[in-house]
Image (cartoon, rainbow, N blue to C red; front, side, top):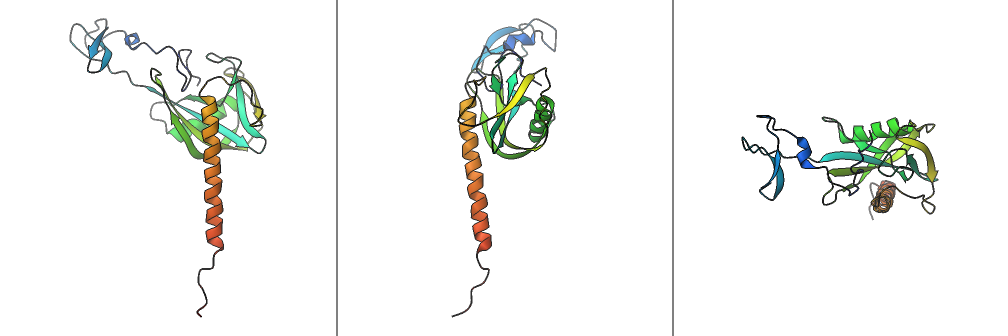
Length: 202
């Protein structure tokens, strides 16, 4: 499920207008923006109901391999024609990790195994909170859905295409750090396992 045209996951853009809620759920009066607490909020002028608009949560996966990272060319706005990670919104009641795996499957037709959390991204004025995971391809072949993603390819980290969103460079940097940290932990664990469990007495 791709993000709407107002803003991509983690991409600042025109804010979703909170007045777009429309009408009061209590008395059906048209809502107005009024200053409540610390900002303008949709408020019913008739009964005083204040509507608190929740942010949207999206997930993305950086699918990495020996040849680089797997990216899809976006076939929809925002960022049509540019490249980015498989991403989309989390359904109500859906576990974040399950949503991440589902989005990769829907957009690229492959299964991934999730690794460490890469990061959580948000920006002032952006209604989307983006949660990004590391991922490893476990089945293929890659088959873009043709609707949200027109094509997909593996790109070396030193030869990346034009990315769709300005936060993508930061995500890649954080992903490289997460992978390096995980590799360090694994090497440390193997080194500890190789140590003798008992030492001979003198």
